[in-house]
Length: 254
Image (cartoon, rainbow, N blue to C red):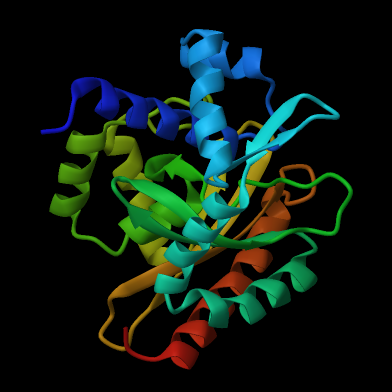
């Protein structure tokens, strides 16, 4: 039988790895310990163990810890299991070039929108939620686009189980508000995250569906709201809809 201490160590190590993965920059030992609510000595022991296995990397010049090569390999294996990610890249690059904004690919998993792939904007100031990032589905254009393919009863059950997250003043906080948005999404064929996830960020998304009508994934374009203005969002969304449809036709049944 596994000892409780062993299980706790694994849980703590995974928590540290997740924190490193969600940080764009490296993190110092003291910062990680404070964020995780653990003693510095405990965090150092766990990081050293993961470093020996290649899951984290220490930069002695900056005294910072980063995600290691083995963690990247595990994440890459997850993406490879989704055999539609590689063929999606040509469409994401096209959307990036057409819009000059960041293009994304995502799925719903465990009640959240997970970004599987991304092609970054070439603009100096970019709006980026990195691959592997998770977002509350009701605050995400891709999440709402995918939810719109469900029945009203399924959406209500989803919201009952997962609730609502008020990330900005524009975030949905009630089922009635979300369903009004869902009806609009179904009518026009694309979803808009109008600064609902991050203030100053706008995103448009559409679903790629199988010939049987089942949603495979969602494609989106995201950018700063002053660049991806309300007036510009609709024509950009039209390009996303076309790309999602052509992508679905290319990959065929799933």
